[in-house]
Length: 446
Image (cartoon, rainbow, N blue to C red; front, side):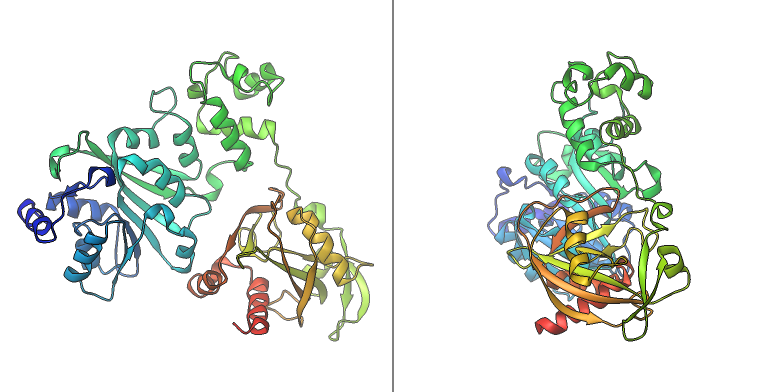
């Protein structure tokens, strides 16, 4: 929309832009088209647009063949969009983006995120929508220029800080261009900039404890003028040794460490000790016949290498809201690494029974102890990895403490999201879990 069209539209719906909502409407049509081009949008994309306003970008995105979910806080603009863009490829949601459930986007096959983020809430929105693991393949944001510089900053610059590292840990950030305040109505007090954010490849950076990384970074930047050895002395008592390991001066400050040095420091404080396939090759499992009767025993390597029938448990843990905890398997797993799986799962070992294994796996994988009940038993098949599986379910509302060497990430998801996610992205899941989820849904009547 050009300047005269925006002015007429605002007059038509009796809207005066609300400064507290960050309402500045883009009237440069060439810039709008350029922005959408940077999102590499095409047919099959599902685009979430935060704060569509009068639809300056929305119309162009739809014309590219994408489906749009427009999240707009102002009811007057929601009504305008609904009346002017009538297509089955546009869903308009009257909602505060800070309350949007990002988890639901896992149920979409190819998600991109665009937004002209209100300056006053930009950092909170970024951290909410880019929380890792994320279903979003590309994000394109118009931000206050200062914020864009912070996201794309490099070490030893004044813009480099905690937010920089929190985002760059999982994402590549490209500062695409600056945007003059004059392209908006009303004109904001500061210039803007456009950044493109895309997920990093898994192998790009060393494995680490992300929670510890965030804690160290926040502490390190809590007082920028102080040396790190003073800010982190409780976590790193041998600072001289740590400095030598990082290749930095003992008097170094937070902004002097690059991303990989922060990761190296994290791994000094909280080292990752992967339970490699080699360590578990000699575990002994009972081998069973077609009726699940024990007939012998063999090592993990022999069982998996020869596709012998064996036993396993899968446990589905729900919170009080009825949401299911899913774990993302570690990159070091010998089968299905980095795929999403049941809350906890594991093999029945020699001399164990199914129920004993279920209780043990809950403690070992999630650090919880709660009663579970049997749901159903799955017969051994290719889909279960030649495992007879008893499926269990239980409830837990306390903390979940998983071992980073065993589990990459985890979180609670609404059951309907899990079901739609499996349909949209079946390759995201370990096949055994998919079979367990089917039998759970059948038993629950869903």
